[in-house]
Length: 383
Ligand code: GLA
Image (cartoon, rainbow, N blue to C red; front, side, top):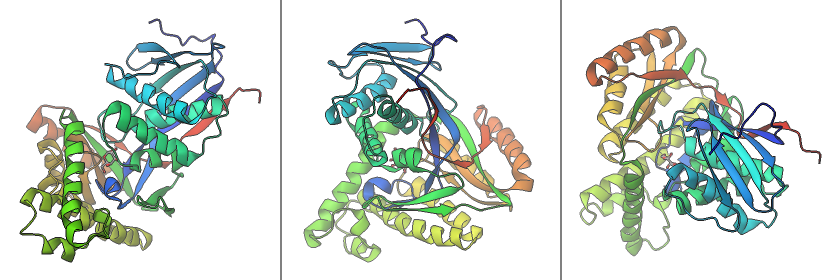
């Protein structure tokens, strides 16, 4: 397909949709626990226009140099996975509204794919947000978040939690979101950590296991819950299970299931403890919790990989690094590090050299700035 973006095309709407970081609270969202994410200054930019047809839509990715056309009366899964993010969102919108018509959309991203900073949610939410504006669909932000999550479940096949979509849409510059993934109640917590910075080190590996193993972890947690529920009928998720309840089942649960549940229950507490630490500017406690989280993800939840473990271990040599851990679903992507500003350059340089020596892979690093969620940048619509 020809690239449809030309200088002469006038777009109706331009939308920015960001990736996210998560300070702490990994693999807790689909267990109804707490998370502490925020959008960052890496984004997908979408340009939209109505094309006057009733049904025909074209979507073009400037990063893949590839696009596709589909009809609104025939939205089905594609063999090309990135198209499923788009088709999934359109499908879910069609379940909620009759007002969608033909549109053209091009997008361009500076979020590295497979790096654990959720280019997927940025893609889903940016599209949903843009179509909502383009056709006046009156979908609330919460609906956009939820339909984007459903798109990932139903069209992409990853049974993800709500964190990424929520962070992408709801974030506020300079804050992180303490989100209760059961009630969806949330609180903005200012993130004032000067003279420390949030540094992401991208392993630039993305092991193929990610989506399959992700769904397996979710099923393992559900299995644990089903067994514990036999004695505690009121529990619905690991959110409702305490450490002492879990320990009663130590001899009953398969060790692997026990370990998965143990990690989630401990992580749930770590998030709340870390929020207090952040509010009290106790960054040492926050950093220490991040190391504990990594340890749990590595040994109990088993979603890390040698590249991530290497970088987290390496960071421990630096007094000026308060904490580090793998971030996101796992099996590759980034580590998130809290680093004193005077040490950032050296830490990145040293880590890059050591990482290259060990794996023969180039590390990429950047500072993440907590930023606002999905937003309309330019609106040329007349209404
Ligand atoms: C992925 C999912 C999220 C969350 C994280 C792990 O990013 O999309 O819902 O489960 O993994 O915390």
